[in-house]
Amino acid sequence: MKKIVILGGGTAGTMMSNKLRNALRREEWDITVVDKHKTHYYQPGFLFIPFGIYNERDVKKPKSSFFPAGVNVMYTGVDKIEPENKKVLLDGGKILYYDFLIIATGTQTKPEETPGLKEELWYKDIFDFYTIEGALALQKHFKSWQGGKLVMAISEIPYKCPVAPLEFVFLAEEFFTKKGIRDKVDITIVTPMAGVFTKPIATKMLSDLLVEKNINVVADFYIEKIDNEKKALVSYDEREVLFDTLTIVPVNMGDEMVERSGLGDDLNFVFTDKHTLRHRDHENIFVLGDAANIPTSKAGSVAHFASEILFDNLMNAIEGRPLIASFDGHANCYIETGYGKGALIDFNYETEPLPGTFPLPGIGPFGLLKNTKINHYGKIMFRWIYWHMLLRGKALPVEADMTMAGKKRVTF
Amino acid sequence: MGQMELGNTMVDVNDEGYLTDASQWNKDVANAIAKEIGIELTDKHFEVLEYLRQKHTEGEVLTIRKVGKSGIVDIKGLYKLFPGGPLKYSSKIAGIPKPASCV
Ligand SMILES: Cc1cc2nc3c(=O)[nH]c(=O)nc-3n(C[C@H](O)[C@H](O)[C@H](O)COP(=O)(O)OP(=O)(O)OC[C@H]3O[C@@H](n4cnc5c(N)ncnc54)[C@H](O)[C@@H]3O)c2cc1C
Image 1: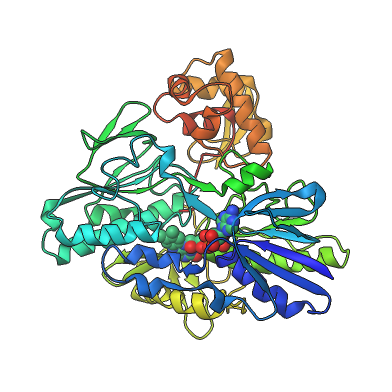
Image 2: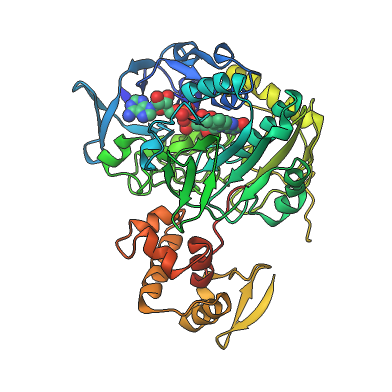
């Protein structure tokens, strides 16, 4: 019996287990998924929790509902991979041998990486919304908050779902306006990048939204520490941003298992060939989802597009062919902008987000880089698509490779 | 997009003055870009620039944190070398793309 082992049963690992079980004969291939948690969270839904739009029950289901029959599932931690022996050590001493390994252990938030972050103000005046605990704590906080300085800060790049902080400030703007206290809430977004938008066309098309909604931007701000007494973010070049409530995306890192196995970079993201999706140094290891160090967004949509390429290349590898399928970095993200509207961006390694329309048979077209109601429905629909189609490895009516159909090449 | 003469070399640059072809880079180009930004390059600067170029060639995403762990200079030191926006300026002088997010 030949063996495929999938490490991580989140978005990417679940998707892959479904695709592979459908394609490979049970008598020939044994498939095992390992994950330390039993609950699957729909992470894109975390964004809506602080504002009471979603609650915990809207974003959580048992992982077991999404794994296909005929796949072994082990709920335990992965301690270490030994690529030279093609084996995986699990917590508690168990060993799994593999012919092919898929690493899909995602990324996690590491508030400990920033001095002062996880101290007395943590979950009192400082929150993240990248975890269920943080999102729920912030919901509770916002229920009684009377206003003041609301700061949304990004600690480090890369982090998953790069547009989420932007969506957060847009939704906060609507939330406090509807509560009737917008005049008492000063909203600021703080980024280590040169701006909230870094691509020329997206900047032109979307940065007016921030001005329109009276949201301040502090750019090139690289957080060194949090001063709990002063309630201030302090940057390495000794600037300060004061806050009353801080929402932060802590430093994102891959799992420590990657470090213990010596397979990734300084942030524990796994060295991955950005086109074949195979490990840079190991023939029998592939990488899918947020765990990979490929230069595109860490997003569920990316994991979905990449899964089709990975599937093809794994089949190529199994059958001894060259890995001819090539991932183009395709990402497709809805951006909630508040008041029932949204924008949509579609891009890849080579092409920055362009305006135009995005064709989706039966539903679209969606307006690219435009602020419209239909794009908001796209985001709301995504939850249904996620549970019912994406995780189950079904084909979505969108191509893995980015298409230029509907896009407008523009020069400003 | 356009061409521009920097340190006696013709290079292709984008609207923000970042080189679009990292292979056109040399030390004179670096000195010329640095001068425009108002930075006088020392050996330490060049160590950082070479490191950035190497990581860029290897396809790695660059961060200030990564440079801070490189053993060449710590983060505070990097700010001293390239004040105001260490990664965007050092990338520009190193002839590699501006650090960017997806939008
Ligand atoms: C607030 C927020 C909003 C988002 N919005 C969007 C959006 O609108 N659109 C979009 O496309 N994406 C969005 N995303 C991103 C999306 O959720 C992720 O990109 C996606 O879930 C990545 O899937 P993954 O399988 O790589 O990682 P995950 O789904 O995080 O799964 C990783 C799994 O590995 C397991 N694991 C890790 N280490 C170990 C170990 N050592 N042993 C055992 N198990 C381990 C974990 O328990 C986990 O189950 C959002 C994310 C957040 C946080």
